[in-house]
Length: 230
Image (tube, rainbow, N blue to C red; front, side, top):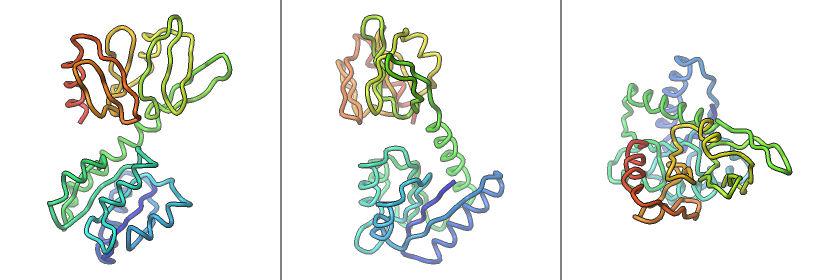
């Protein structure tokens, strides 16, 4: 696993690195570290290297803080795991705004940190799941976390991901290949709960900018699924 640690305190960087390394040794997982003493230094490097699994971010740093940095990262990467590590509790809501996995206080509680890293590992493994789709033009492997929703178009299903894939099969057959993040709403659509931004009585709004009509009576079902997913 590839970790980026961003903190303007050298001792804190060393402490975080050593704790993550110990966790990796306990799990039998190799860990690689990239260390930055400012958000600006990380973002400069990020222009060329974007394949991190986990970002461990301090919040209170000179000039740009960790939350602002995370907002910039989220514009281009909705999947990388972000964990905030800070000495103050004033930023918790900001952390959730950028989809942070967790918010840890300094000094670190090792047992809690280990549990959070366990959750990060589970999320990363989930993000790597994929499905094979066969269209009239190609057969392609599509990652589940890239799919926002799937709906029906007569005898075809339309898989909305980085592009729209038109596949001749039933919604029920593809539903069997998906995981718990996908929810059936009515007879003609499946939505990725992790992509839901807002729900009204008539529509589901996704963080991709897409909107899916919500069948009558499905509002409470979607709300419950969102709560259970968190």
